[in-house]
Amino acid sequence: MFSSKTLQLFLGIAAFAAISSPTSVLAASVSGQTKKNSKKSTTKKSKSAPASYLPPKCEDVGDPVHSVAVAQVFPSEFMRNYTTSFPLIVEGFEVSDTGAVDVGFQSFVPCLPTVAFPDPPVWCTTEGQQKTRITVHGTCLHDITDDYYYIKGVLSYAFAKTGICRLTRVSRKAPGTWNEYETPDMAAAGGAVEWVYDDEHVGMRLKFSLCPDPEDDDKVEFLVASFD
Image (cartoon, rainbow, N blue to C red; front, top):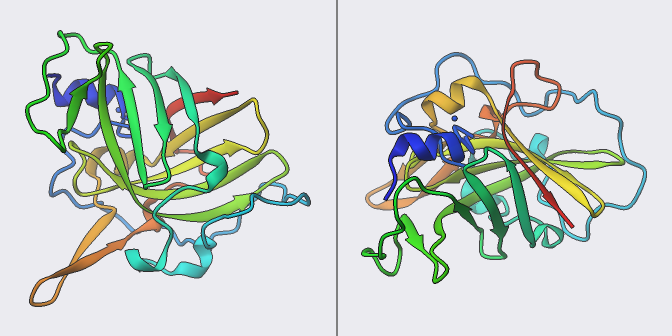
């Protein structure tokens, strides 16, 4: 197994904190005032046709928004394998049509047998690679330019159970790049998921306003990947 600090460097995806960074994510709340999803983008708008399916615009979904009101998966054009160049511990990841992202990474310790079947936080492939799964709870479209989609997503994984909000910039044409960004507060505190209860658990609300915007100077890049 590996330490939560190691996953911090990698998922960092977070260190987005990293896709694994927050070691102190649990039960923490994001301080300060959240930004509005309706914030205007300074990026150049696209005139070409968008993907066949995209999530709703972030400015139209409200904040927080109940998870049933937004897509829980990425557009079909994003369903592919990606090769990661940063952080170095992450080898790559695969986006599926089930709202899951499976991340492969290098471990500093031997790959151990899976003991939490069928839903282990970390498992080993038959080739000895360690993997972990990220669950995407909802996405919204921030912007489209001629070159990129900007999509905000709220996700969680074994070491970020209070939820992480990330801005993802994805090239519209292949070969292309996939870059993920977080705010400094998000990397440290999490808190993008708000659980909703009546007499019983009835779902969750998602806080897309905790994601950075493309023009934010203080946004932190936690993952860089490419695809063919």
